[in-house]
Length: 151
Image 1 (cartoon, rainbow, N blue to C red):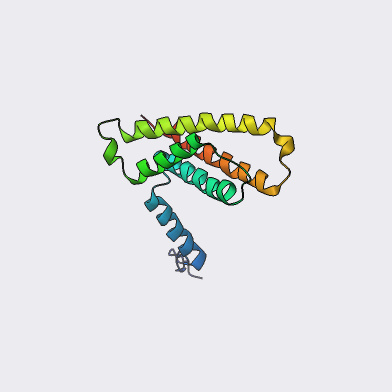
Image 2: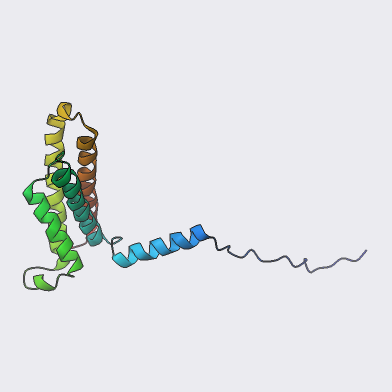
């Protein structure tokens, strides 16, 4: 009987490339390239959700309305984010403006929630409820982004 001090060679566990792993990596890279993983990007994403909610549930279905002030702030957040703040250099820095817009949207979201809870018994259609959920999600995402901005 001989004792061999070297263990037998086993094939190394190589990472297996599957289509799902590749697709997830591509989606993650695209998400980070869009910049929505940054706090300022989250405020802009909240603005995009609010704009999409307005287009779908107010403009098309006439189910859930969004006021002109939140819509304007959402539009400004999106333009400010994708414009990289070039036109605001004399006003304030982009993080300060995005934080302010995000906190204003958060406040308006609380007001919208209180208003919706006041009239919740009149929500009898799935479009109204779904519209409310989408719009409130936009406010929450903007709040989470504004809270994380260091300015």
